[in-house]
Image (tube, rainbow, N blue to C red; front, side, top):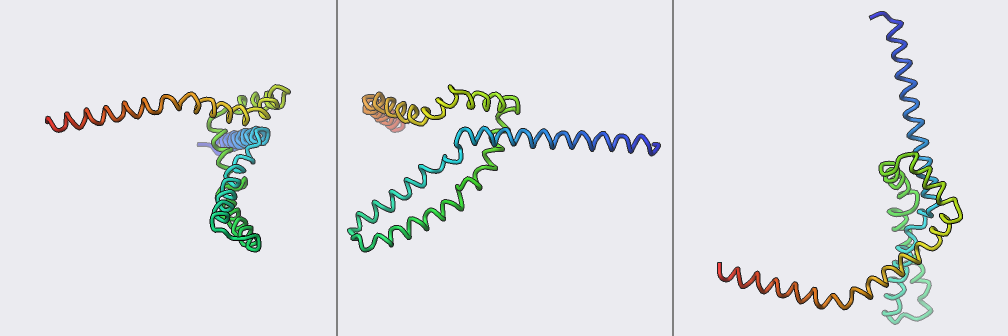
Length: 168
């Protein structure tokens, strides 16, 4: 094969691969922008708060007085450091970018960004956590009367399975 066509092919492939990398970088940048708008860097905040609360409850249960509050704060800081090693934004962000780029095309991310930058999108971002919590409460309240009935059905099925097993 003559040398010139091989060099041309190599140049074309090189340009094409550079375009793929540029597209991937652009796609990742869009995912990062979406995650920024969605305040994804705050996803772990409830976990930190829950761990802090666990330490505070254990401290209160121990009957330790205010003079030992520094000990509580020391352990809370240590717990935060442990969490930082696993779920800090810098640890989670690369995986979230991969997750979003594998589930949304670059164009879809651009559309999501456009929506979340709009007034309605901003309102969705602000109200969604409260709406999600209220929806969970509502569902839980509606579910409570069904729990004993479902448990009874489970119990009945277990009895029936046991009686058939005895017959076999």
